[in-house]
Image (cartoon, rainbow, N blue to C red; front, side, top):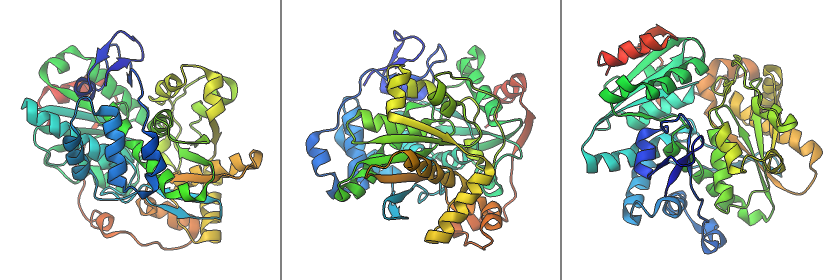
Length: 435
């Protein structure tokens, strides 16, 4: 598969180049030059396939020209020892649980695939790389877990000080070894800016083989399409159109869903559900895209004022606003509305949601108010509620059980390097051989 830059179509890259470069030299994003269709035969029998079989078929359809089927199966086997189940909440609404991986967040699907495919290429080249990643919450933990002790790879994670939950922070600051956490006095947008500037700095590029594990990297985006196919497989027997409501921050998750749709997955509609960082819902309403500084909310992993993947979302629809709005609707909610949704679902279905999941649920309910057709609604649950234990318990007035893999982190001392959101300071850390 050949990839091109969203800023300069003539800038092309192979799969390996796109993965390890992360960003094109013009600071665009890599997009597939063409999107192959999944086979009709596969879709006709998808309900009989396991998650790994679905992931293997999607990967082979997209990347089979550069990786053999046996190599793909090895990558999938290494990446996934967990599932993406759908759980019934109401007669017509289901939640797609994406928190059954090691960091208990949906980012595990992308991070573990990325670690496996990078390791595959590194074994062939014998080179070493340094991964830089910005996180608003869950990406950091997933990347830390996915790349922990992977030979030939060191990881530097930037996160906004005081703007991630305690458990999220522990997940990315307690591993050590080849994982370093930098606590930035600023917002996620500041962290993301520092990473992007690092990739464009010639001195850093000359010293290191830099790569990103954010959703700006195409190797993060591709595997996130797997669970849309997997959800459809589990719900196909209902015989109804499927609508996905996606809690959205940097918009990699929604872009992956649209990639699945472009590959031929039958999707009736997508809902872009955000918190008060609502640049995309406002764009869907007016046609004007006006990113703004990020606002702090209780759904912190979505506190992104200028989502990187917005340009990919547009490009999937040939940069045509009308085409985007025919397939995607946008809604945004404040913290009070989010907590109300958490209480509503707990009261009606005895189901505990994290705040990000609640935003997706609320988006689906808003969509239903104006779309009365007989369809199956699927809202994505992107993190285990225990990762936001204090907020969830205060909202529901109930103690919830913390899984052992999270509980064990609470008594471990965090290790992070604190710095201001200044690129020169960040560059100095990297140039002085930060491991």
